[in-house]
Structures are given as C-alpha cells and as structure tokens.
Image (cartoon, rainbow, N blue to C red; front, side, top):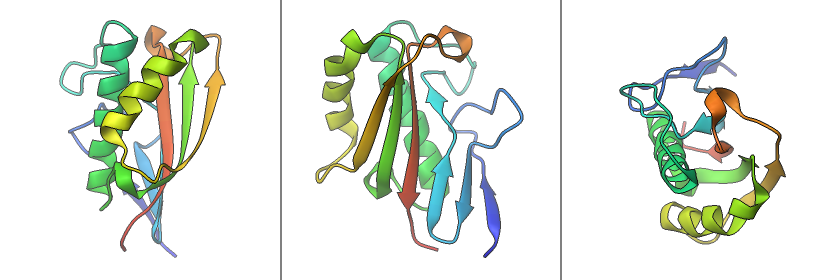
Amino acid sequence: MTKKIIATTNAPAAIGPYSQAVKMGSMVFTSGQLGLDPATGELAQGIEAQTHLAFKNLDAILQEAGGSLASVVKFTLFLTDLSDFATVNSIMTQYVPEPFPARSTIGVASLPKGGAFEIEAVALVSH
C-alpha cells in the first residue's frame, strides 16, 4: 500500500513538520485543523468563526483526498473551553450529515496560535 501526502492551497499550510493529511489505501488521516484563514494564515476571532473555518479547512483537505466531511468515520475535537461544547455541536450539524460518525471531544489547556478549537478526522474515501 502506498502512502500519499494530501496537500491543498484551499486549507492553511502546515505550521510545522507535518502534512495536511496522509492517504493510505482508502483511509485518510488528517492533521488537526484550526480556524485559520487559508489565504492569510490568521486565526479567526471567536469560537464560532474558528469552528466554521476549521470545518471548511478540513472539508477542503478531504475533498483533495477524494472525500468530504460525509466520508469521516471518526472526528477528534479539541476545545480550550468545554463550555463551548454546545456551540461546536450546533455548528458541526451544519457541515456533517447524519448518520454522524464516531467522535471524541477533549478539553485542552491550549492550542497552537492561541486557537480555541481544533479538529482532526479519519475518513474512508474512494481509491
């Protein structure tokens, strides 16, 4: 099985030594996505704007890999404030169709660039 690196200019470039995503066969493993503007690399202001942008960035990467947010089998969400849980859930339903994939949500002390929200995914896509 060949490892393919997934990269798109429709999502922020990696800010460290990693790839936006890696595809192995029909599985896609994404790196965490913050609410960064792909054009400027700047963090959106507020949990709602960051969450919307993170889902859009993640979708752009999955589309480059041949899938979409509907292809996701497992999300991992990271929040610096778990009181934002309901807000993130509401926004997620705008991007992810039912039946919903498996998901973990983890409260963390901090995220890169001072982000409030980060999301990563594992997806099943066509070869």
